[in-house]
Image (cartoon, rainbow, N blue to C red; front, side):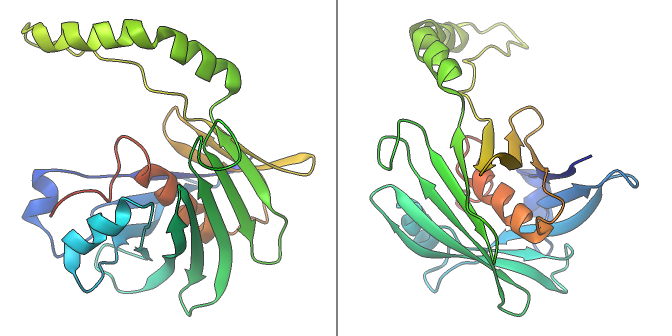
Length: 226
């Protein structure tokens, strides 16, 4: 059985009511009991504060801390941007004492080496694993249906019926990482869960990875203006 990580992002009034604690969490499940919180991701703001973070974010840069609990008592890991330009961003994942846990590279679709967004994960001392966002066949279907989805969105905006929850389908999001003949990592769009198929995978690297993947999704957790 694979270990599973899932990020839960809290928005809106709850976050504003108690800004002294970290509300976003990463759950870990290994089959031995119920899921447990192992990390609380939080943006690590530069000297310019939120405006500076959001400005750097546009180029693909990210910077955040994984705390052991909501009260920031202990740092579990840190994600820093080594470089971000031309649609390619390289991140370093560091442990609580600054030790290197791994490197994560994101190459944006049509900017890197393919038509799909490419994620490369290299654990410290481990083999490189490469994953692509979505399968080619589902991207093909999604692009074919795009005109219809645009019409659905327009109809949804014009329809004032109470309780209307229409909208366009999300683009393919599933990512399967390959390293040689194995699949050590897999991000499943249903439930937004990261499966650690390789038992030797450091869950701290996995927690950093799912936080990064989620920061580039439509429900980005680190893009708020406050």
